[in-house]
Length: 146
Image: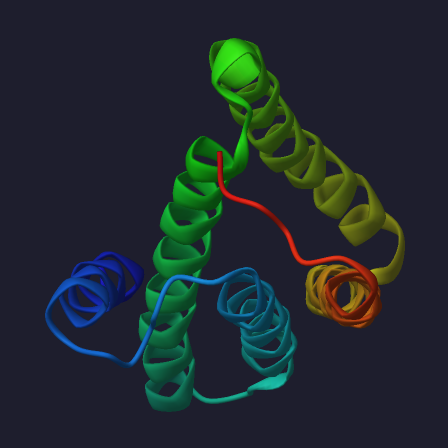
């Protein structure tokens, strides 16, 4: 429930304020924040902070997912837009399903908290790499919106 409330308020914040302006950088930073919150959630030993972290987790997940979907739709060339959106949604859903299985299998070996924490670290590292990559790519050539 905490993650759902966080997602609702994240969506409201995204639509009503300037806190989450749609950009590639903002989407990547929200993905990195999501990874860090997952790590913190996996490490917290107490109920109250865990609920607060679930709230943040829901907000960052919704903002990242919505913004990434919007950017894919806006940046895809018109003649390929449907195909690109289809691949994006398929990849996003497949990675979520796959991560559930890998976290569960790894959790059986090293423990659920470690498994979830390592997953959060992986998301953070991937986001950091994407941030650095897009930063250098934007310097060399700005992304054009079709």
